[in-house]
Length: 339
Ligand SMILES: NC(=O)c1ccc[n+]([C@@H]2O[C@H](COP(=O)([O-])OP(=O)(O)OC[C@H]3O[C@@H](n4cnc5c(N)ncnc54)[C@H](OP(=O)(O)O)[C@@H]3O)[C@@H](O)[C@H]2O)c1
Image 1 (cartoon, rainbow, N blue to C red):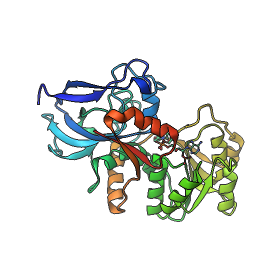
Image 2: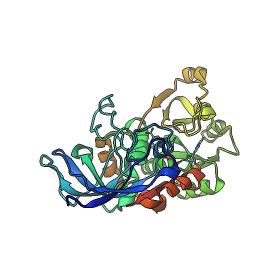
Image 3: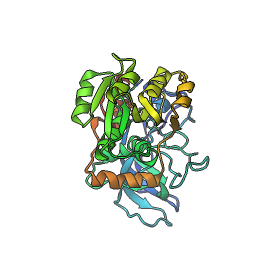
Image 4: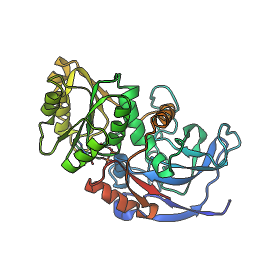
């Protein structure tokens, strides 16, 4: 394979969607503890847009995209437990294998502080790999390591929830739709929000128990209380930033938990600290999860026959177009990219 050519997207200095281009490079060779993966799919996360849009600075030459699924085509000399032909997924934090997050195991972030998966061939450490769920396509598997794992960690690893508890899931993006699927498999009551009544109908068809349009009902925190007999949700996933955080506090029950995973809207959140204190709310920041948590999630989706909702798939040479589509907000669930 040495000397063969592979396609890759390497970002220039100060990237924009207009400067993304494929180039041709020799196929890299794995080190002793690495594998060479033929990447077959990646998927879009909001974090990837911040990188390719130049909002998170990365060195020139960085390969973007944190999600990747493909097949192993070569093994380093020390690698055990994997074979050529295995269908595997990479990890958002390739060195966070197990245990708690640390500065060291969170230092490398795929597609940001180390190269990601917008490439036909990548060399990655064997310890970062998780076998794909059985029966899943590469495009499906490429949606799991960031959005799926974040939803899993928020609800299951950190969530401290029991069947019958109520969760508030914001918007209809990749993370929230995964959270909805996991919540319903766990017997939770799911209240969803969206800016679109049409999407609320589609979320109801996926099992959402109640829906609130956060655009036409900006005081949606009160609406959540009304839907929960004045009690509030046991757990709220918070992605909105700005005034959304105040609504999440209103939506959260006394002693409940707010999982802060993003700030999709720009600006510093208004912090209703008195209510956070007086309502005994646990505010829990978190970023994705570990390889071992992803492996647990694989067992869960296999047991519950969950498949991700993929809104649309693009080819790798349409990556900029895929991001422009994401920015329209028209999608529900994940946007995949095949290679
Ligand atoms: N911390 C982590 O580990 C982690 C991991 C993954 C994602 N995230 C974060 O989670 C957020 C969503 O990510 P994603 O990958 O799912 O993005 P995505 O697929 O692009 O979804 C974005 C969706 O979020 C909804 N939304 C936007 N602004 C909102 C607001 N103010 N209130 C409620 N919903 C809003 C919209 O849904 P409607 O069209 O239905 O209105 C939009 O379609 C981002 O902030 C991202 O950074 C964090």
